[in-house]
Length: 168
Image (cartoon, rainbow, N blue to C red; front, side, top):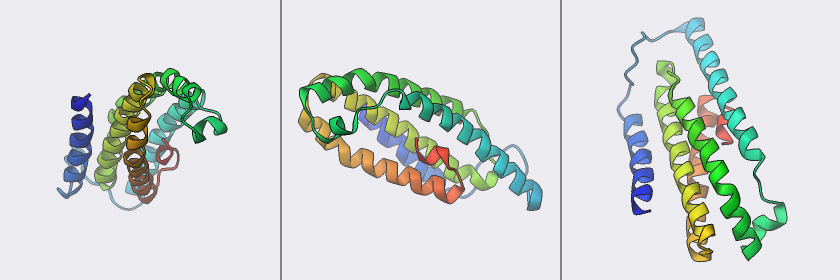
């Protein structure tokens, strides 16, 4: 489990470091003007379509609003049952998204987003394990980190112009 935590933070750190490198290694020349804007919109549409599919898949596995408020044994059982499906959907989404090649202008934000999404999937796996073990303390400890990662993902995705991908 310690390896999973370390991997999540390493990926987020790498995403942030790539963001500071200033450029990206795109095999395609940078586009400008209307062609560049069209390429960005097309890329965002492709990515958002994948994110929408993931949102649909994970939407099938949700807790009832009242169950989200308390960590009862029933809630822990529900989380333990649901988490693996959500982890699988989110992980597959990250794999599919990582196959896309962003335009140079979006490369930094894109790699940051992928890092956050991957870290969130890893943390959700930890949530599922903690719920399976009925470890309320571990679950409560994960909340601030997941909240922070979601906020970071939403902020980067919003700045880059994504809609569905900021909700994953």
